[in-house]
Length: 276
Length: 290
Image: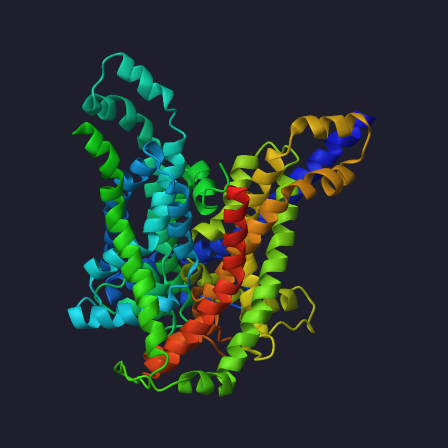
């Protein structure tokens, strides 16, 4: 008897969890479905769910009218560029703090992370003016640098928590076996550090890909990544739900696929390492 | 030589980050603070004129709306996200077989840009199309849901989308907290026949106090810097009914060309953040040194 009620209860809990998942997933599902509708079907009252003539027309129109591919490439270059540049600076810094910690290391880390808490609005105007004077407005390189700077504390901090997990004894063992510093780094530390670096890379690509505050404020037609493009597309063409959905679907697809293959890292990354 | 390296390399590799933070965070915040005391318009001016920008700011009904909205949005957003997040975490904690899959789905809204997912929200909230039309289509002709275009209620649609975006994230935080509670204690309680709800309310949740605090800090920080939510959903409208401080500042700096006013609003936002974050950081540091 008791076992039976547990089984029923468990089925109920599972069903509930799935229903909630469906509710949460609904806006994403709707966007994907709508991208295959015609504009008329997209605003039908009452709404049409699956029973319509599927079309790829919206995707073609979005590319034709506004050179979608360019904005897509902007997103790729800006998010990858800022992440790689950030890693270049952050890996040695996090490395030093994890393996050669000083008395102040923890405080320095906290201090760096605390700057991430400050709202970006505090530095928006000077950066905007600086960009204007240097001719960096609406350039990809400018955005790469700003996004790198904004995410640098998180990159360093995430790498630090990953590097901290590499056991120190393994270094001693390698040293005992006669490995010199160079071999130590190439054969022992690097293979162990790669997963952490990869996770950090992934999270920061996602953060940079989604970044809207800086991309909206510092770009126009030329260097706009997908977030800025979609924001601008939705105001003048606000009622063209089908085309907007096609643009949106292409913008979220890479993240959804990346996220799928890296669920664990995503959880850890999005919760700022509070969750392991 | 090696010793010199070991001693100094850490400092050398940290120096660029250090310099970048000093200049781009502290230097630029200092610049903003300075300019907030000037009469800067389209171009920055550096003659200090006193607190005129702040007087103007506090007299502005639009800023008043923005701060009110921040209060309404922040409170509801934080409270509802925490409650839903905790509920979802407890739900997933029931050893559901597809947990990994569900957890990812719950987290998707946080991993996707609100600017992009806002497309769907605009449709859902549109009185002529989404929720209202659907429910009316089911036969409930009198069902009304026009919050998006109603100045008195539009801010609550921002809350809805914000909660949607963040609950999964809070869930992940809490789930880790639930899992970190000592399994032995829970087993002992189960053996003693204590009912599950009581185990949660008396044993597990009280031991998660630090996670509640960090969830609160992260959520309040998200609330204050909320920008893309409003831009994606309402653009600050109708009128300026859904303005938040961040969008107010954006409007001042870029649409009105009033840099001084934008700078002063940025400084007030900084102070709100400090009021929340500094006590937290202080207590963290204290806890560590004890």
